[in-house]
Image 1: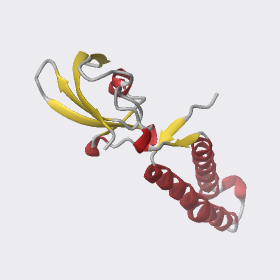
Image 2: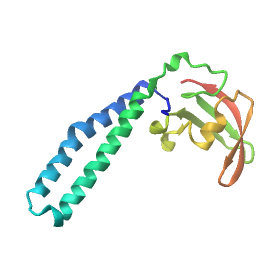
Image 3: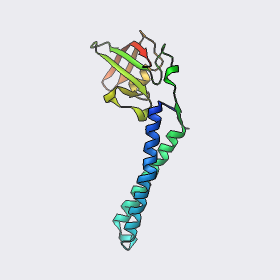
Image 4: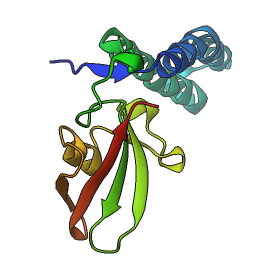
Length: 158
C-alpha cells in the first residue's frame, strides 16, 4: 500500500529534478561502467564488473523508489491551508513547557525535511505529535529522552 505525501511546488520540482538527474546522467554512467568492466575479460573473476552491476542495481532501486514517491505525491496549495489546526505545510511556533524555549517548525513531507531550516517531517515523532493540534493545546510527544510537552503558540501558512 502506497502512502500519499504532500509537497510544495518547490519540493515537487526538486524531486523531479533529482529523478531526471538519476535517469539521464547516472544511469548512462552505470551502463558505461559495466561495459568497460566487461571489456576487461573473464567475467567470473572480474570484481570491477561485479561492483558495477551492484551499483547499477542500487541505482535502479533508488530510481524505482523515487518514481513511486512521485506517483503518490500531491501538490498542496499553501494559500488554502486551514490555520486553525496543525496540518502538513503548517508553520508552527511551539513553546517547550519544561525549559520555556520557543521553536518554529514547518511540517513537510519526509523528503523535504531539513532540520537546519526548521522543516521537520510529518512522520517524525514531533511532527506526528503536532498534527491536528490547535493553538493553545499542549502536545505530549514521546522522544528517546522521555516525554516532552510542547504548547502550540501559533499556526500560520507563511
